Image (cartoon, rainbow, N blue to C red; front, side, top):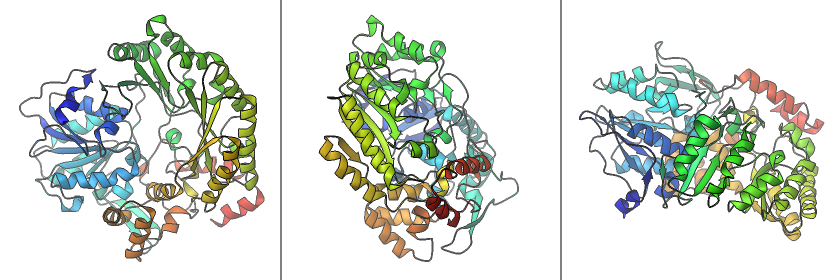
Length: 547
């Protein structure tokens, strides 16, 4: 079965023939093949390694793998989803590699990881990885391989010390964390010796050629899709948004140098095209790109676009998409409340949202999916009423358009201005309230699991002490009950669930990622936080003052 899956792949790059002495590497995606091969980040890193003659790379997924080296020197993971940590630990055990760095010796591979989860906050996983690559892989990956080759024959300790000197390479074991008490906040984080940098800076690729698929296969989660990254980051900077803040600055792919050649390459092997990015339609030349895809020679192309900016939904855009087999559009509105959108810096008005729905329908689309959020800092009961009222207005303005509201709970994320806020305890009730009000209106309401949001918040704000908790929950199963049970077992060794998930943290507090610098300094994040909280109602301001 495995070989037939790999043989169904069509490569859009030419792998190198590995040299005799190539670095034997396993590159894993800690989920099933169909999920992993649909990750653009995973595809690009794997192809980058496979195009190097000095690296021999084999792929590994939870359900299948290529032929694996007996004694790999490097064992890497691309991590896109928090709960995949269970599969990381399982795959390490499958290859008989100790799951904790402290238990590994010179005979074991260097275990490295990258991807959005680890770049945002690697600390809960710090004890499982020898090396973490922070930021964009474009420059980082080559620098990592080159630095490793320079110390390839040294002992493990020497290798790790040398790798820690490379910008963006974080070696967690070379930093020690001191806490105020076993179950208290962090006191300080410092390198174990003077030759280790005190701060690791996330790496940012600033070129105008962005990523595109390196492989197309019918076995992907979206069969035969060819993906092109149109923009990276997002210029909107909504105060809670990791996709914007962590990946700043906003970068766009050059149409002539990057997008058109990439699209031509992909459409030579498939007719399914995905345009990716947090805010695709904000590419300054998006209309030119659309004109290019609208050529008659591409009439049979099925086009899908990630999320689009609401005020860029024109009738023309909707027509192009409808003609290209797209039935609905996705827009993130967060709330129907103008006041709340101002707090979170979502520069959007209700009339623009209604107009987007009208345009979508006029252009021939049959559905519109909106993304909302409850429990956003500063949210009041009337903000939920405003969301219900807005959904009713949209339904009235565009009758017959299938409306869906996907709704999540606010989860604090590192490197954003809202990292200091906890999850609102009322959020679950608020999701239920929206469900009750919207269902009778014929609006498809799809809430994200509140319990999953709790686990997400725990991991996104976690520190190193969580590694023991994560190991325990793996044996209990990944329900919220398992996490609560593990907290009970570890009482006194780490703070309680409430500290990580619900507590509002003081801006004076040492954050778990204090030594890992993102795109903006903490002082700027605090300034953005102050801008948001200055618009809170007095009752909410009192809450933030008390932390």
